[in-house]
Length: 353
Ligand SMILES: Cc1cc2nc3c(=O)[nH]c(=O)nc-3n(C[C@H](O)[C@H](O)[C@H](O)COP(=O)(O)OP(=O)(O)OC[C@H]3O[C@@H](n4cnc5c(N)ncnc54)[C@H](O)[C@@H]3O)c2cc1C
Image 1 (cartoon, rainbow, N blue to C red):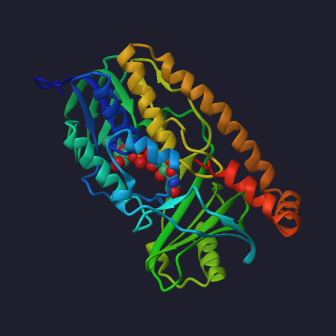
Image 2 (cartoon, protein in one colour; image 1 turned 180 degrees about the horizontal axis):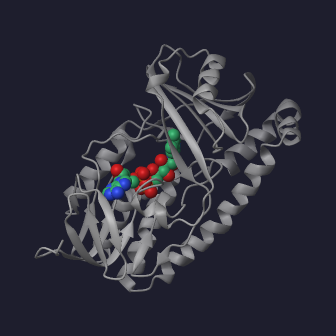
């Protein structure tokens, strides 16, 4: 199909998640005009994510005109580490904020509306189904062809841009949300999946129960999840279960034809903790700066830094989930050096600030 008139945009961003909207808003700040965001869904849209944020994530949102406190974010103090169903350690939670619905729907919708209010052009129901880097065009599902100066793929771990990822390893992450009479608390469960952890997060009458693991094709994740719910004493309809992949490993950020990758599409999600919002927002900002200054190396350098950081987290993930290390951490460490374990957890694993 031929390009219709006014089909050229200086920058096309694919995906209106945190990474895509961050890129669009920073482009505005850097004075780059004629930017359009193409989004597959219509907001408010569902999103399989627990939506926990740290202080750093909150700062990043505030810099873009959104205060997560407006989505009812607050600290749940009661934070416990559980190993194979047994309580091991209480942590003084000063870093991990939960929103009132324990999901991402409200936060993403608020960010979408904040971006629109600041003049970002967003086309909803605009799924990208094709990309021609040589001719610098993207094709929408309805056949519309748009051409660009730069295209930024910010469409997540399973969007169109995911085909450009060279890293094949990934985590699976699943969750369901049910009404509850449990008290407000966050429980992190270890020993329930071979290379991952679970969470049971309860806030004001709703519980988000979730599980992540390094993905194995031969695993029965529904059965694993059902078993996990049984162990936690949660009775919920397994049909409510939602799951998706998160990336392991940072790929190439800048590809031929001025094609940039950010957020999950780039691999900007911590493979061990699953913290991805913060890195999605930051990679969006780096892409915007790279476009504004006409220097893709700005984004590539950010990706290089993340690659090293996440390679360390991945190495730690591999070591941490071996039996002897788990025995040392939970059966010796937590019992004998509980305070030290809490300190390490607070200061290292979950990005205190
Ligand atoms: C179960 C689970 C729990 C998690 N919990 C946390 C947490 O508590 N805290 C945290 O920081 N991170 C968490 N993460 C990770 C976090 O969800 C991701 O890292 C983050 O969403 C990445 O943001 P993004 O903008 O790159 O992609 P996304 O948020 O996935 O946004 C991509 C956007 O692109 C759109 N899109 C997709 N395909 C197309 C297409 N072809 N055309 C146009 N648009 C398209 C989608 O509709 C979506 O709006 C969790 C992940 C999972 C799976």
